[in-house]
Figure 1: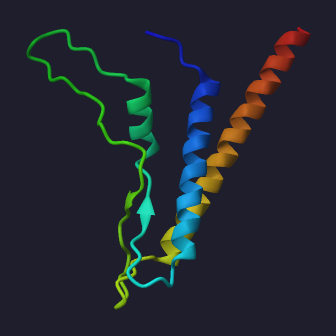
Figure 2: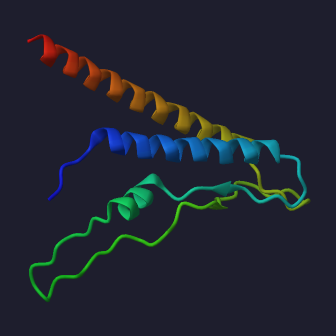
Length: 126
């Protein structure tokens, strides 16, 4: 088993959050565009599974093998809350919820980085 690199994981998540924030803002910008379909990224857990290449080990031939999904980090259609008669399925409420989720995750990442930075400083002093 390899060590978990916290800063690498945070960097990967921050890149994913930046891309998702960009797509959410694009969806909001096209809220009045006829026929526009909302887009979203794959869940971060799927991205992490693919990038880490982790698989569960099987110790017997009777065990099922579980492999990470091959889904890439590309824009895909999101769940539509409502569809207007122009064919546009952008829901500003849903997009604002996604934007808040991105903001909360950025904030959590920042707090984790601050905490570990403080731990490093205290270990150097002692």
